[in-house]
Image (tube, rainbow, N blue to C red; front, side, top):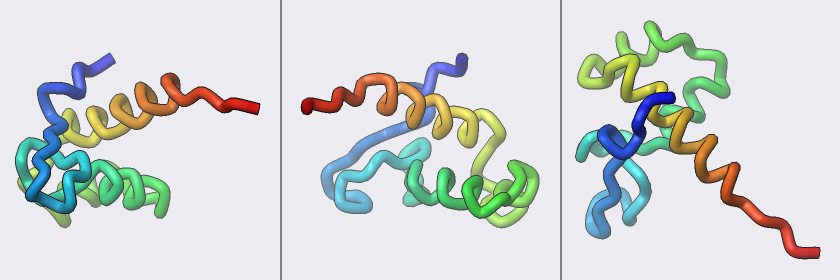
Length: 74
């Protein structure tokens, strides 16, 4: 799995502290939402040429890691 920590940054003053790609203003949520809307990695990169495939996969790895850590208290 890709090391998302090299691609995902969090800055309090940028995009309200949401996780972003490499200090850009593109959030992990933005990328995940594009994938959920069935955009391909090639389409995303075409729209946002500053992104790489590794950036997109880092978003997936970040989301998977966060999901893995979720605990539901009943």
